Length: 68
Picture (cartoon, rainbow, N blue to C red):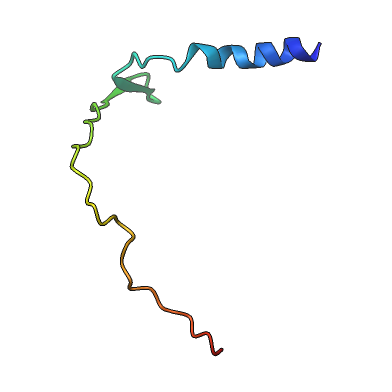
């Protein structure tokens, strides 16, 4: 019984995400009209080369005094 439930719970994950079909958001207004808001497509971020130093390699942290 538990294995069947576990299988059914994991079934949606096996298909992956649903592709996005709508490019607009439509909302209904009180007067019976419909407001359509376009959704712009995301641009992929530019791929820049990584610095060899790294982002968190600075020595600007406060040092703890061991005499405390």
